[in-house]
Image (cartoon, rainbow, N blue to C red; front, side):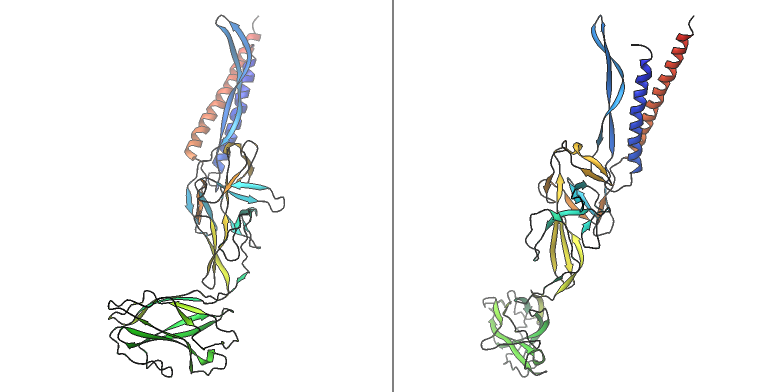
Amino acid sequence: MSITSSFYSALSGMDANSVSLQVISDNISNVNTVGFKGSTVHFEDLLGMSLEGISGVSRVGVGASVSSMACSFTQGTLVTTGVGTDLAINGQGFFIVENATTEERFYTRAGNFHLDKDGYFVNANGLRVQGYLYDTTGTNLIETLSDILVDQTQMIAPGVTSDVDMILNLNSAETATTFDITDPGGTSHYSTPLPVYDSLGQTHTVTVYFTQTAAQTWSWNALIDGSDVSGGTAGTPQLFGTGTFAFDASGLLTTGMPVTLYPPTGVTITYSNGVPATGISVDFSGTTQYGAPSAIQTLLQDGYAAGNISGITVTAEGNIVGNYTNGEVRNIARLALADFPSLYGLERAGSLLFRSMPDSGDPLINKPGEGGMGDISASMLEESNVDLAAEFIKMIITQRAYQADSKIITTTDEMLAQLISIK
């Protein structure tokens, strides 16, 4: 090999280190880019001719070239943003986003999402986040990957009150008496209002009066004002339900639960809005009769008014949960995550996106927290995984290598000039 071959060896080194410097500069420029994954350049040597010597065959190199650029998929630091739709993956996996026009899917670790004007959950470039939708009840998950849509104009239907849980303490020191519906306040020992909802989601107030009628025995009477009953008279209460329960010597209930709150025998009520009252059961389990002031401890009922969505939250399992103006909380969708047999086979597609390629294998799609996938951290984002100090060190080494290659060219030129000047 001639001396001029060192020109090309040094030139190949300069080319390779130029690429390395370009990658380093790309890493440094994205040190504050959410979800960015840094890359590293790998070099390989180039072989030239073989020379036969005393010790056998030896191979002479002719420089270096870039063999590959590997992306580092180590996790970046998670930082709190305070934005509810910002999401970060704590562990393995990529968010799946799709171009609504071309239906091409991409994969990203950048979770700076938001709801667009149509209610679709999208990334900063308008690509739609993929996941699984729940049915209208928010209980059954539809196992088909689709765009996540949060319909902010949809109103959920009201729920009729059918079950009530009521726990209270009734003062055992009260004097036994008989309840009189014409004087409920004067012939009862304790009362509490109970809101119930009809099929239109309108609320009606039923007041439950408790009266000690004998030792360890209490009656309860649920009354509704006549103004809220079709054909009733304002200020005149109407019986909504009645019953009794007994306590043992320890002050605990001995009556089986639950009991019927409505309808009592022979009573039919139609609310003033024309909607008939429906069956309601009440569970007094846990109610006590102790020598302490009567007080309500728990009052729960399963009815609710119609409501619109007021906001969303995201759980660690990737459930997107809607919070409604009527106090209801309902699952809307669940995020899907993807992983790959070979992450190093993924292709960068720009805008913090990756594209699956034959070398990466087909995506392995699962739900957060399942199948090895990471959990979701809401109101957080994953920072770039670029180590700035390490990049500066690599930049210095690359610069020195580039200078050394250029020195080889200068030295080779001087040697050739000396060779030519020989007479």
